[in-house]
Length: 130
Ligand SMILES: Nc1nc2c([nH]c(=O)n2[C@H]2C[C@H](O)[C@@H](COP(=O)(O)OP(=O)(O)OP(=O)(O)O)O2)c(=O)[nH]1
Image 1 (spheres, rainbow, N blue to C red):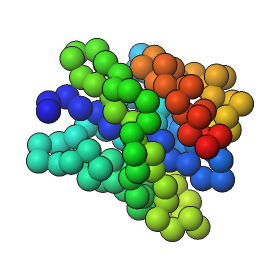
Image 2 (cartoon, protein in one colour; image 1 turned 180 degrees about the vertical axis):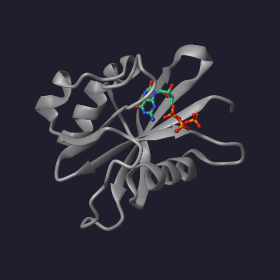
Image 3 (cartoon, rainbow, N blue to C red; image 1 turned 45 degrees about the vertical axis):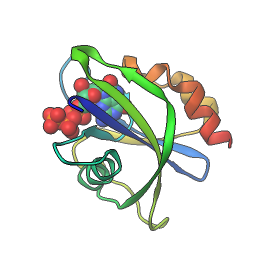
């Protein structure tokens, strides 16, 4: 399907990894989940692992869906999947983003999320408390 954006709910030690966008200007400074567009011929899992490698310089395994599909402007959709570091000792780094932050369940509401992500907070919290 055209226009699928995949996002990683990457959890370590009960915290979720968020990243701060540097671009475009109207979203710069806001926070999102690692991820991006599923390219032609890719599965969602493959695309998500590729994006995590590109954006965070880490290898991840991709698990099950988190929450329901979220409609995005322009007819796109956001699908979030749980993810984990293959090597727990690896430290993600912000290759393309301004900053990274590990967020606990009580901090999720205080993050300045991209608008679409805000509706996923209950599902993200449930994942962290699982
Ligand atoms: N990665 C990511 N994108 C999100 C989230 N929430 C949300 O609305 N988006 C939107 C922002 C962008 O319009 C789109 C993803 O764009 P992107 O720039 O990360 O995608 P990409 O790396 O594949 O870049 P491109 O090749 O499409 O330019 O999805 C989220 O949690 N993570």
